[in-house]
Amino acid sequence: MNKIEGHIVKNISNQYIVKTKNGEYITTARGRFKEQSISPVVGDRVKILVENEDAKTAVIEEIDERKVLLKRPRVANITQLVFVVSSQKPKPDLLLLDKQLALAEFLKIRAIIVLNKIDLDKNLEFKKIKQDYENLGYTVLETQANEHIGIQTLKDELKGNVNAFSGNSGVGKSTLINAIFEKKLTEEGQISQKNQRGKNTTTAIQMYEIDKDTYIIDTPGFSTFDISEIAAEKLDSCFVEFKKYIPYCEFVGCTHIKEEKCGIKNAVKENNISEDRYMRFSKIYQELKEREKHKW
Image 1 (cartoon, rainbow, N blue to C red):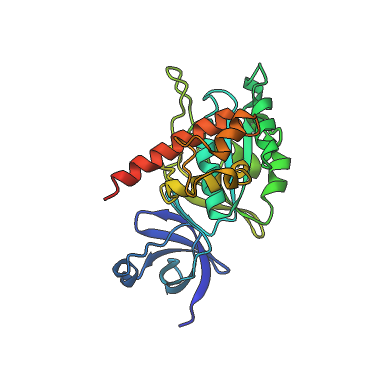
Image 2 (cartoon, one colour):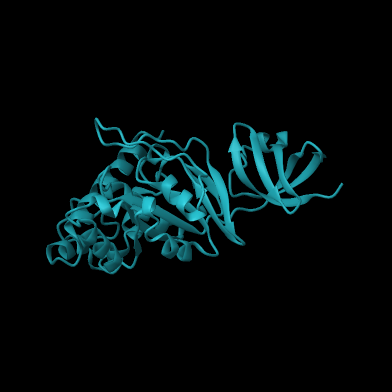
């Protein structure tokens, strides 16, 4: 029996929806994958054997080598990360954004930033966020998803990529995705009036096809986002504006935290590196060090 090529577009428990040229199949994975400690994930390119064509059931026989794997949330073979930040309700979480951007640099994946809900930011504070990150070389888009403002520009940026959307719950990821497809594909989150934090509505990771060779993977909210695969001592290379100042540190392996003769800290003093970004770097560094300390 011939194997059919496809890719996993949804995972629910131990079942995987695989999209192929012959349609979608409900599949399970061969037991040997579990023995090898391999779990199929959304985005995997796979080869399947059909068990029942009428019922559209099959079994995953092979998993192609992954170009990229995010550990948490677990998705494979993405080519672009789309980080959605709410201008208001909830307030912009720049610490999370910097964590996400660091991971994108670590994985060598292009990242774009989407500032959503711009209509709620009456003081236009999002303009400074946009300028700061554009100065670092990142593409930053403004959107108002519920009014379809900025959606076409976003769609143009997604073309030809397997895009993973990420961001805090309540920032409007689902609303953006629904606007891109012009129909309700995902549930839109509610904002708690008590604490203005989002209620996560995405419970499963799912891949949607926009057009040929262009996909969106919707991932659960920030509670599952993890960058622990970055070693603390490698974090500095994941902050793009740090790279040219690292050679000016007196000590090899400078942490840029306690050292005095530090190229990064001098650049902060001379306003060549944002003090806010540096402070967030320091916090992320300490989090990674703490996690490494308790790893074993």
